[in-house]
Image (tube, rainbow, N blue to C red; front, side, top):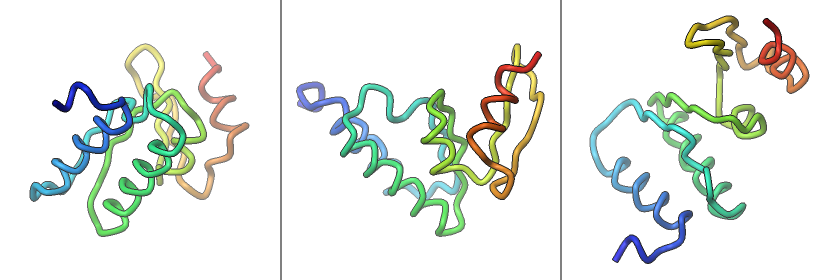
Length: 103
């Protein structure tokens, strides 16, 4: 039955299942890909709530606005290696983009 739901509702169910477990760290790879704007906002709010409660999340996304809304730190990767780390107070969209395109 779950496969009949929209992508956003499927993602919400997956995240809800995770939250019912006793985990302390969530690994999320493009969790909002293919999800409508409303569901995206809900998922991001849920992830923020989880981390604000002292838990951790590793959030992989190619959407800069999501990263800036969710992350305390952003790691810029190139060819599988970390080339820069930006902390929350340093996170500005121009700097992230500049780091992402540098060699």
